[in-house]
Length: 505
Image (cartoon, rainbow, N blue to C red; front, side, top):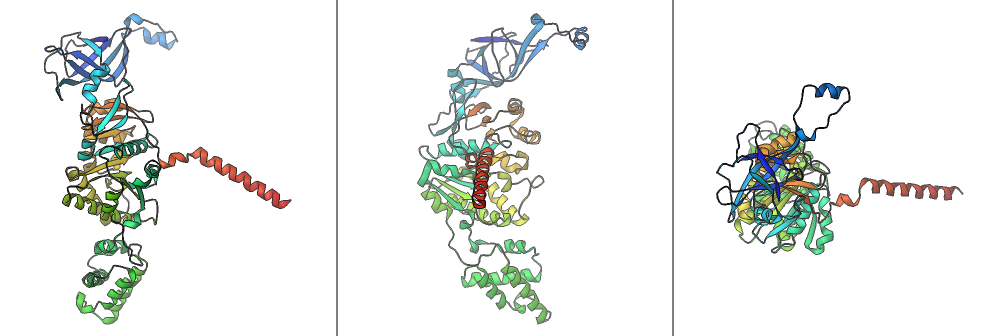
């Protein structure tokens, strides 16, 4: 169906970007796909509309009339203009840009579903449904190979549906053939709804169950106490840790205190009085007693690799257990390191790591920081390693965040080939534009809840597609929305009042 014709105010016509004047009955909207016929071979050359507006020739007296409340309707001098940028034409599986000039006033046609499918449908059978394209009604599917090989970024402001998008993608990918394995780092328990769908194929583990005390770095313990390496307390502690490791004893408070008592002044090079040295040892012992990092007793930690071999989805639940970000960072570093090293050594192992609220684990330190510098730095290092080298070794990274500007730039850049992006704050749009370019930002605008723009190698055309996300599951918090919570509190309040009345009678 012919939509309209190309137009230029200056008289110059460029094939990379075109302006369209739709005909009277030609409907067009932002994000729509249109095409012109290739001047040489007649194939469809597809364009995507990024801007649409009305234009009317103005006259000097109109402003004065409007000031008096008089409006002159002049449909003859009013037109609709649409601006679009070029995708290109299909050449087998490749999209080639148009290199020939377009004639002035070239006919423009609305892209039918069969043309859109050529540009957007992944050729692979290993893919997941994300949602539908509102303009064409076609399913928008993502190639799982590229989602794992080149990572994925899901971002958007609070309440835009980013967590619903992530959960739905995980649920479908875990049911693909072959199914994808996931380790989800869940800060608020939002992903527990996956248990209702998979039952025995999902394992939720409190984060502390992964803690391996024998893998604690001495720097981590010193950092918890706020000491510096050159202090005598630090030297005594490090010597005691050496004693434990050489003896093959587990790192627990009692055994470490016993090791501290064994440290002599000569072993650390202390040359002052024995009384002063004993005072330092007492400081170390007291610090160990109140440590939140050193366990009271030895517990066999769960192995994340074994769990991923047995379950499709492993949820590392950070909402359970004590609240200490330094220790959470340390445990997560242990988990991710073990998974990554297993993938390097075992070509039959892989998984996708999902970081919910990624800024808590890979922050841009100038914008956001939590925990202490040492533990945060070690965690950021392994996350960067997975983002840059994990894909080629079967370890994908999906980062979910509400504030793109607070996530480390290296992580965002590595995920840029696969982006699912909901409505963003202005500062986050600027960060995103650095990665994906101006066309994406022009199209993004402010999206309704549950809608997104998708761009990346996981879709065939590598250009942004508008999609209405089709939910598979909702976050756990959706089961208890604010109104329901207060309704239940009101019911409980009435029941309590009735009980008081009964007692008074």
